[in-house]
Image (cartoon, rainbow, N blue to C red; front, side, top):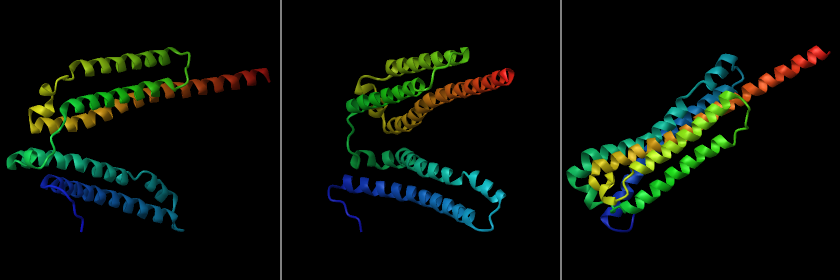
Length: 218
């Protein structure tokens, strides 16, 4: 039996954490079992090509892992919106938050994600084509504008922050920041995929050109 030393706030917080953990664990175990079943079937002597293709196209384990992660956020929102404030749990069992420190840390996190987006663009090999340069500079400009708009409209005072205004505003801000950070990662990844596509296309064109020249010379 798990026990927690401390006041009621610590015990209740650990209880909620364990509930969220076991819900996540159930989804992850289901994903592992699903993957294991397909793996065993794929190793069977009577497997065929259709079964191997079905294994490769099965996305259920990935969906289950995503559901496991999403369940924590969904439960947190539901608990905060419908139970915490109604019964006064948010003041009785939650540790007060340092909003000023939170603003500082969120600012560092966004700066780090924007920097990773720029880095993912710079590590792609440069190609002397119009499409490549247009995409490259569009990526730089869009990331700069994202940085400018983020830090311009973020509150700089704890009294103006959503986490200070209300409980529902705080949990909504928490959920939106998760999606926002994922979107920032997707921006850099998308531009890198565009630039990598141009790199592959240029490599194929050069290969075809070399083959043509070799054919003509022979």
